[in-house]
Length: 180
Image (cartoon, rainbow, N blue to C red; front, side, top):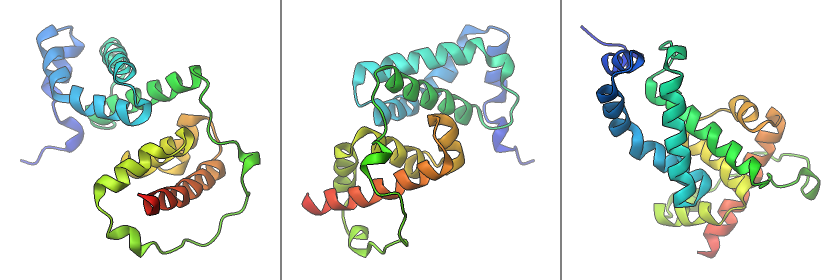
């Protein structure tokens, strides 16, 4: 019998809903490293990422009654971590690159064959050198798999702003990688 992916760790989630601390700890152990990596990609500061992950788990366990298996527990938790990370950045007043500072039109998708041959470490270093707003868009779109509508909702921007920020971020990333 094939189990649907949304019900992965269902017994642990259900036990955790009823307050079983051992099950909560098991869920924590299963997901803490992945959630920490997400926090680090957005925040870049170890202590901030650790705080966000801990807060996210606390909120997740407090609100488990709202988890209805519409996604996997991991996806649900990841969304909490990403939202908390972005809210943390907003509190620190670290904005996206201002739209007024850039051109408003999008050009046709360019081919970046030379990027395909670049090793992954250069790409990682390039992403780290991006301005924070660009870095967040790249993380959400390429690494976390969000679409532009979801990015717009999470970041409080329009879909077109998300798309244009992504295209500019990708162009800037290619420029940075060429200098590495």
